[in-house]
Image (cartoon, helix red, strand yellow):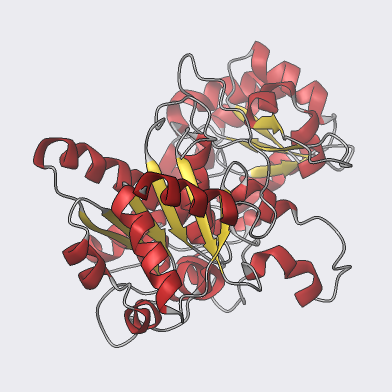
Length: 391
């Protein structure tokens, strides 16, 4: 199979049985890294292709989330309810290195493509599976989505807000992309092992497990000390030097002075408030934590006197660690963020456009963004490749 750009995964062949985001994201990372990825779709297509229409938005619009996760792949339409197309998929798997799927295992099992059946028939294959809640247990086949499994059930959402407050929603695809990266890493490890043993096998992760790992700091405190590290409002943050502060024009800065006693003198020099160093309630990290509310109020008043740009220059001059709170528009214009974008390959009639780049770089590999496949665009091409091989 051709069509992949040279890269660290050049020569690796991936078959994707993926829908929505998490599975396609994992395979999309591999496509960005140079693998030849064949995306298997039903005649109706991956539902992510028409997500805007599903939520009542103009269905004629391009779908940037689909474009990011599926660029550089080849789309093949198969009807796995037919013996002929089941045989075609097995031919693809026999020739592939990796299968990536986030379809429910019960459904795959009914089609004959559960991990046990596939690994037995194709022992060389790395079978990468994403589930909502894991491969075992009562909820192994429960529909997840990242809002449910990664965000809500993992404890992540509950941990983000003070007691008594309802958590906000998760931004679309955030947990899916994190889980997709997790599976991509697991598949790479299994490919390294296969290079020695010649045998593939199952690699799995779940939205739930990835969400739990994402808050392992909090989980660890609960497991070791039997208590939750509290979430408090900004005005009651026990770490005033790791907190967000509004500036005079309504933008915000985030102080990231984690080593409180080391950084405190630099902050006082920067804000021209040496008097605070002599106040008994602010003498140590412990006392500042115990008196965080009045200290945050003091800092609020100070930071409201200048703009973000002005404070940024002052902080940099005094070695105060900080970051701007940026909007998406700010990030797109941020010179430091530019390596995180890539020029996409427009199709005929499309204007040039950009998208977010996969967040790993490889020396000597430019990681171009291949074109986004139309539904079934490569079906004939892929089938012809196997017909020629069998002659």
